[in-house]
Amino acid sequence: MLQLKAQSQRLQLILDFLKEQAFMRASFVQIQEHLNHLLPIQGLKPISRRSLESDLQFLKSNLAEKLMHVRVSKKHYYQLLSAPRESISEAFKTSMLEQIAVQLGAQNLSKEDLLQDKLVFSFSALNDDGKSFELAANCTQAIAQQYLVQFLYQSAFGTYKSKLQVVAPLQVRFYEGRYYLIASVWSELQNTPKAQVKVFAFDLVEDFVVVPALVEREDGSEGDLRYFSWLQLSQEVGLKSYFKHCLGIARFKESVPEVIRLKFTDWAISYVKSRRLHASQRIVVDNPNYLVVELYIYRTYELSMLLSRFRDYGTEVR
Image (cartoon, rainbow, N blue to C red; front, top):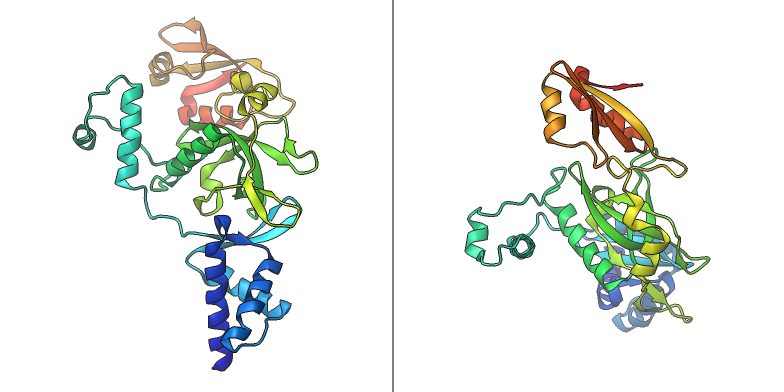
C-alpha cells in the first residue's frame, strides 16, 4: 500500500513537471533530477533509474493524455500531449467559414447566415470528425510562420509502427477525401531540410497531434522554434510544378510523365466530359459508342484506383 501511494505521488509530480515545461516535454535526466529534489522534501526516497523507467512506462500506457518518447537532434525527451478533442468546435468551423466566404467574395455573409447553411463546406475526411481539417489548419499556421513541426507517423505501407518525423511544412492539399501535408524532412546531419518532397496523410498522424520542433541549446534545454525559409525551400524542391503531372498526390522518385490513353463507354462518357480527370486531359476520339482521352501524367497506383471506379466502363488502351 505504501509503495502504491509513493508511486502515485511520483506520477503526479512527473505530470506536474511536464506541464510546466515548454511544450510539455523534458529529458529523462531532467525528470529524475526534479523528482530527486522534491521527493526527500515529501519524506520519500530518491527514485532510481529503473523505477523512473517503470513510472514513465505506466504513464505511457494508462494516461488519457498521450506521453510520447520523442527525439530532438540526438537527445531524447518525454513529451505530454493533450488528449485529442472529440470533434471540431463550432467556433472553429464558423471562423473558417468566414474566411472561405471572404475568398469567395461573399464578405457580407453574417455568422448567422453561415450557421443557417447558406454556405456549406465539408470539414470531415474519412469520418474523422474534422480532426484532419483542424490539423491542416494548425499546419497552415506553421507554414505561414515558417517553423518546423514534428509528429509520430504510421506508414500506410508495410509496418504500422510509428516513427518520429521532424519536417519543414510546405503545403496542405486535399485529395479524394484525405488531407495531406506536403513537407521536407529535416536533416539533423546537415541541420537543414532535405531538398525533397514527402507526403504525409493527416489521418496517419498518431492521435492527430502535430507540435512545433524546438532548437536544442548546448546545455540540453530547449529554446525557440526552429525556423526555415519557405520561399527558398519551395524553390529548391520545385513545389510550384511538383504535382503538375500527378493524377493526385502520388509520384515516384525516378518517374517521368507519359501519355496515357483511356477509353470510356456508356454512362462514363458524359461523366468524363463533364468532370476532367486531370488538367492535361485531351479528347482524341468522341463518338456515340465510346470516348478516348489522353492524359499526360505519372503512372502510379492512383491510375488503377481511378479506373476501378468505372469498372467495365473505363479501361486503358495502348
